Amino acid sequence: MKLLAFAASSSSKSINKQLATYAASLVPNATVEILDINEYEMPLFSQDKEELLGQPEAAKSFFAKLGQADAIIISFAEHNGSYTAAYKNLFDWTSRIDQKLFQNKPMVLLATSPGSGGAQTVLTAATGSAPYFAGDVKASVSIPSFFDNFDSEKQTISNPVILDELKSALAQLS
Image 1 (cartoon, rainbow, N blue to C red):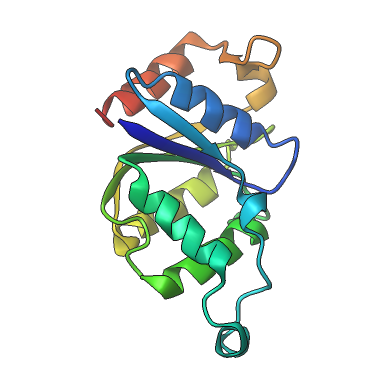
Image 2: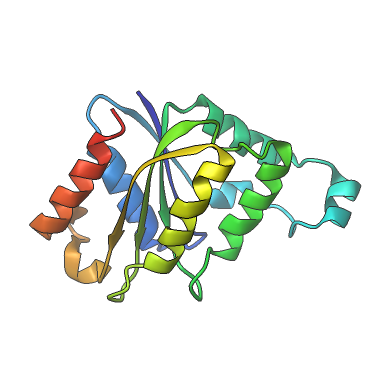
């Protein structure tokens, strides 16, 4: 299985990138590619920019990466209860290539935050909207209080209950 994983965050210290990378490592027999959405930076989307620029190569490249994968893991950071601006912009540009940007790929959606909410608000939004964009959401998991439940030194979930929930979610990709 070719597995594509990324954090919907542009932070160089993203805890969601740590989570996405770790989660991908738990999928047996997967060839994993970890993307950094910073590599797909584009001007802020608007119809005017689209008329001026057409479809940016970065959006085309991101769409192709999604299409080449057999399954996708996305871990969402939450900014003020919603998507990060970086992810939303990438999503907006890519969805103009094809509204079915997730291309019927099985997906596990994750989210985490330092606080007890675990970025649940953005995860709920992402889980609810993905099917409209041809995302086959198999499971979603919110991990609250990241620094209490993830051992950054060992790069592993330290809470056995959360680890079991994550493994059960990821098992649905195979």
